[in-house]
Image (cartoon, rainbow, N blue to C red; front, side, top):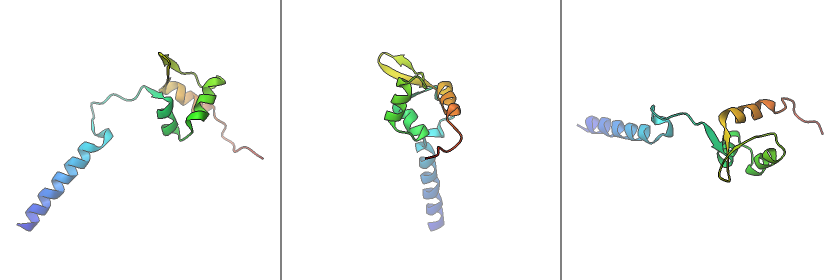
Length: 89
């Protein structure tokens, strides 16, 4: 009896954990654009660094009103253009 209850509890907990994961929805559409904050998190760089990249033209967002949105392709191009070598002092 105790094994049955434990099995049930484990199953319920597993189902709840699976449901709470953000990637649990197989029907969800893939992300098509980042906000500056979202790209900052995704690429682990500061928001101010990305805003500077936009200001100097290295990263070209589209705008929804005043809100910059960076397309996934633009983010990939920006990342590919970063230097591969570590800078020397």
